[in-house]
Length: 212
Image (cartoon, rainbow, N blue to C red; front, side):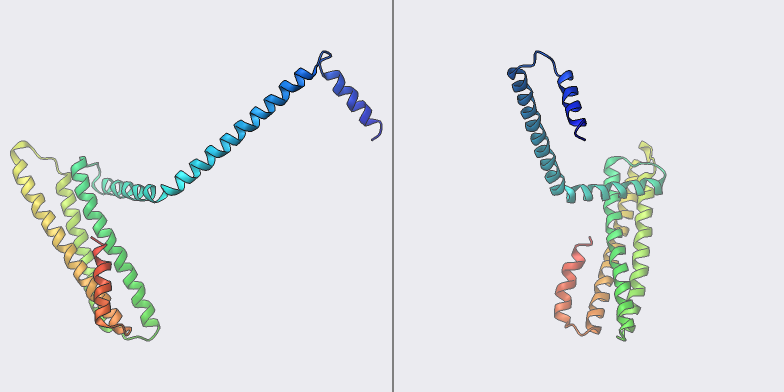
């Protein structure tokens, strides 16, 4: 080890330019300082970008869900829809998806209450109606989407609009029926668990309004 140190120093001295001056070393120091400043600026920029991404995550997630919904509609129909018609289809599909999500949660709640020994006979009967309602609403929305996807000539344009309007009304009615019956199930479940009707009504109306 003692022999290595002088050898290493000699090697370094051999590599260094013979005319190296204090000015040269000063320039090296300045370059290092500038590099450190650039590194700090880059780190600040990265931190700022991370903060921006964090605040926009909610919006990005919502946009991603909307994109996936529209892609699902395209796969179902076999082709894309013009933007105005796609907006109509996406609105109805989103309503159906919300009701399906609520129905799934109600199913889990029924299972939990049954496992706890709570009488859910009335709620279960109402929930069977809800399942049929949601299925009917989904079918009506699909029928509407197929009309939206159909190409029409100028001669049949008015008839096509009338058919779309009728299908849209039918889908909306089916969704409202499903929503009403979902509220009835929620109220029945809360009554079965001992919650008062008044509190159930106020809670369920606010919850169901978010599904449309």
